[in-house]
Structure formats: C-alpha cells, structure tokens
Amino acid sequence: MFSRYDVEGLEDRRLLSAAAWAYGAESIFDESPAVEMPVRSGVAAPSVGAVKAAKYADVTGTWKATIKIATSKTPVAGTMTITSQKGAGAVGTFALGPITAGAKLASTAIVGAGRTFSAVLNGKGYYGSISATISGNGNQIVGRWSCNVGGKWQTGTFVMDKVVAKR
Image (cartoon, rainbow, N blue to C red):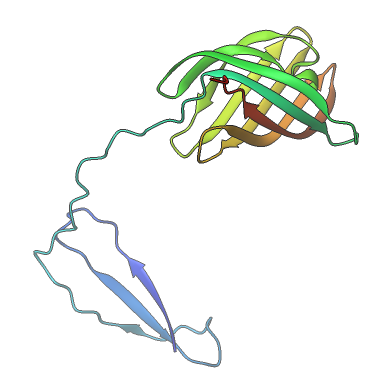
C-alpha cells in the first residue's frame, strides 16, 4: 500500500501535523478517504546550531592548462596566474587560448566551498566562461568552458595543473 503525506505550513514549529491518504494496489491515483494521524503538541523541531565558516581551496599560483575544443582533436595550451585570493574571491591573469579568444586579461574567479571554480572572462568582442571542480589535493582544476566570439560559440573541456616550485 502506498501513502502520500501532505504537511501543513508551519506557522508555529510546536504544532506539527500531517494527513495521509491510503492508496489501493490497483492504482496510486485513486484517492481514498484521509487517514487521521496523531499529532504531538508541544514538540519543537530540532535546533540546527551554529554553521562553521566554509574553507575555500587555495588557488593562488600559476596553473598550466590543456584546453580541448569540442570541434577539434588538437589540444591548446594556456596559463592562469592567480595573484591573490580572499575567501571565495580570486584575482589573476588568464591566457587560456580559445576561452579568452587568444587574449591575456585580468579578471576574477569564484572559489566555492564545495571545491567549485568559476570565472567569467570578458574582453573586447568576446565573452568566455569556465565552470570547474578543484581536486581534493588542490593541485588540479577540471571543467568545461564556452566562449562567444562575434556571435559564434565554441565550447570544450580543460584540465589545469598547478605549477609547484621545485625545492
């Protein structure tokens, strides 16, 4: 037997209630009369507690990119240098081949608490964007990109590896 539960809007968190409708095995769309459910008054919803500040992956430094265009088999090289980062905001220079229409430009990026990375790369005559995920160790960014140059869209994928200084 299937049941559907409709929960009332919670005006007061102490007055939780629900109504259930029982459905026969022949069809889940045939409604039967409502079944009464016991209501426990005076029960409050559990407290959520304090939310900890999110930790953002550190993306500062130089990154070497391998960029693939959806319509080509030949990858293109590129670089990204993030010069500063404060929380979710990162600033740097981007020279990402087809993603930046062959240009090198200064822009910002957003680093999400869930290890996401995104940027909008705007320049004269083009509009590019990237959406990616940062690896668990913070040394690789993998994602998708798109760029509109003169009304013509290009899309593809990329992998960026952090350049680690040798000691």
